[in-house]
Image (cartoon, rainbow, N blue to C red):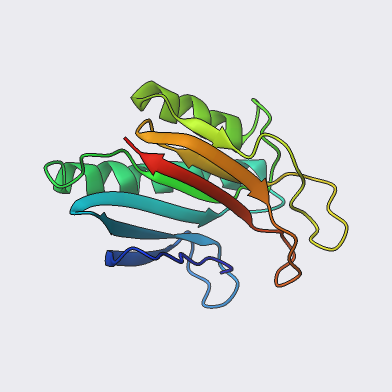
Length: 164
């Protein structure tokens, strides 16, 4: 539901995971493993519930359990922690899911949150920043910006970085 992963690097594996049972309009996430010069970079692009804080936290828990299982299954193949991005449907406030995820990821490593400024919603006249990219510790020299685009109700976030 509104998720995509575009990459110039080969996608080695991917899965689409729904948070619920509805056939149409259900929120969820895409998980993919990208081949970066022979190394696997796990990527998650998610779309969380827009009205319910309780549901957002439940969805975050589902995604973290999924990643934990994937990490256990592929420990030798994952030299990098996952990149996590998407529509969080809440600002980066410490009391909601964006802040909770950032605290969790920072326990794993020195993650950075992007963008720090800008507005992504609604796309025509944006007033709120709801879309974020969490870069893992090996992502160096990040440059992020919100792109002007009317292809969605949210503006896309672009982050350029190099890997250490």
